[in-house]
Structure formats: C-alpha cells, structure tokens
Length: 148
Image (tube, rainbow, N blue to C red):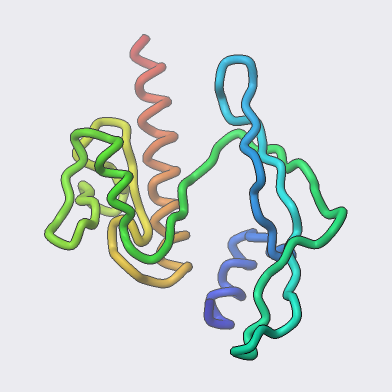
C-alpha cells in the first residue's frame, strides 16, 4: 500500500499489526466462525536473491476472536468464488458484476467488492467497497427481519 493509503486506512480505524498468518479457523457448535488461530510472522535472513521472506515468529501463536470472515484472495478474481457460488454473473475478465456501489451481485444477499469486482485496485477502494456493502447488508437484513 502507498503511504497515503495506510494513513487513510488508519483514519478509518484500521489497526495494523506485525505480519500474521492464520493457522486454523475456529467454529462454534453450529459451524459459525468464532475466531482463528494465528501466528506472527517476521522477516527471515536474505536468500540468494537478497530477498527477506516472512517466517513464523517462534512462540507467537494467538487466537483472534471474530464473528465474520471476508475472503481477500489477491489482486484478481479467484475463479473458485464463481465455481462454488452458482448464480454469480461475471464479466469477460472474471470480475463479479454488481448492482452498483452497494456490491449486491446477481445472487440475492450475496455482496462483493474490491478486486473481485474491479480487478487490481487500491486498498482504499476495496475498503470503501466493503463499507458500502456492509451498510447495504445491514439494511437488507434489517428489512428482512422487519417483515417477519
């Protein structure tokens, strides 16, 4: 990320930590995500190319409690998303097609944003898409339960 992207992210409440790597997703008795076991990473010694690669920081395992997980799979849309979620429309580049800035896809109650929709873009644009989708998801769920 560019320096200004980091600054904007911090203004939005994002907390940056030492590199971490999820080891195991933890679920409750109903199969819902409740957290993940992670390890901190640190840069190892330079290899023959001079690049320092991340290695596990010994004794750094910790549990991170969460109630939601969002897939973040890189800078291009992962075809696994479309192949495991029938009914998602995509363009010729494999990017998911949404119904505007709220991120609603062609499948009811399935939202997408970031690189899965735009292709490679900035972290800030992905975060903005996430905020828009979160607001739309909250609204859709509230409306669904108000009808009952």
